[in-house]
Length: 84
Image 1 (cartoon, rainbow, N blue to C red):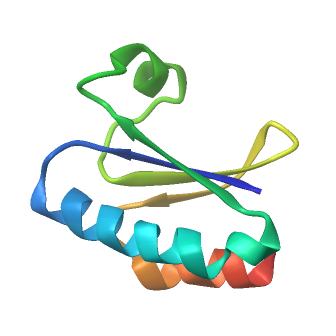
Image 2: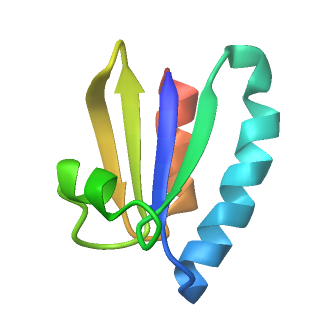
């Protein structure tokens, strides 16, 4: 699984970035890869994935989006990671 966090410098985004950093270490042995995309630095990628609210976390399997979490919802993200 690949997890991609779309963010900017808002307070909620910073909070999620910190939590996702922790999750990346926690789930490292499950072969889950985490990536971050600053929407101000990669507008095109954010547009390609129709990111309209931040933070938004996308979950990919085999190149396909399988789940999406909009907002700072670390418990929801953990639930998805645990269900994988």
